[in-house]
Length: 333
Ligand code: AQP
Image (cartoon, rainbow, N blue to C red; front, side, top):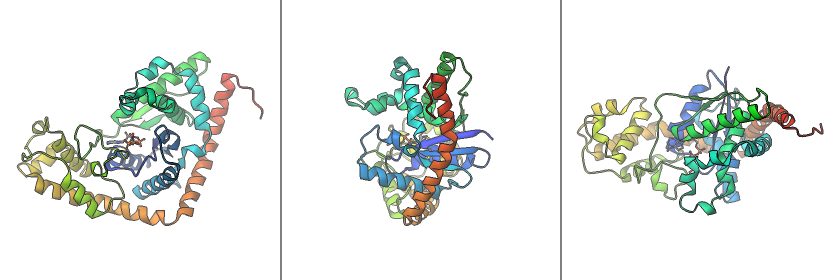
């Protein structure tokens, strides 16, 4: 079976965007892949996280992932900081990747914003750590959204340069795992901005632990325009907020924009939002309920993460030890 690696940052409660763009796909690939699911807290601190909040968010992330259907018995679920191999390999990759490559990464530009000089050095080398996350397990498949594609190409560039510089065939090529059309969910307050768990406005997103009244209220307040829904997807071209809500409906029902519009053409947003809120409650309420149940037993969550970290380390440590040997580090073992 191909080995899959994917990570999610514990930088807040995961959102509907994380669910439709990533987590839902994780569940789908578990049947026919050997999966390593990582809560990437090393990545999370590239942006300031209050320490107590980071601990709580890490546990909440574990609970949400389990509630969504991540299977910690057949696969591996763990916290990145618990497996030292990630940081060790990332340092080697910092020395392999070229500054010019990192300068081209659009996510750094987006996340650093205008105050680039004040961004952490960690945010800048984030793609090197992501490459290390994957290569530490010799994973060959990574489920990615469009926003991560550039990072995956960089991970392959790093592997090739490492193999070339040290004259080895050690790190394999990674291929993106494409699972149907990418579901990119946008902010409920601004249809041109992606929905993010760290957006300062809670109204901009649906959190996977929102209760049904909160979901209904957020959808009712979601920004829209005064026009009714068109009958064809072309009619959504200059209407980012309308397109976003239709896209969410389509993703939740496993259809496309055209199918949703055939059903709802001519409807005003009052009617459509109410149908969308009902659908969201139907799909997300079981996740929220199960998350709350899992969070009630903190000790069991920690046990699951500890067992995951031990199994992850058993895979990654020999691979990273071999990379260190290739580089020329003197072994003290
Ligand atoms: N709005 C989104 N639509 C579709 N997919 C999304 N993802 C994130 N937001 C959306 C996908 O979720 C996975 C995990 O993301 P992450 O936590 O590692 O980082 P991120 O992409 O930066 O997610 P956030 O929610 O925006 O986090 P913050 O606010 O901390 O920056 C990725 O596969 C991503 O594509």
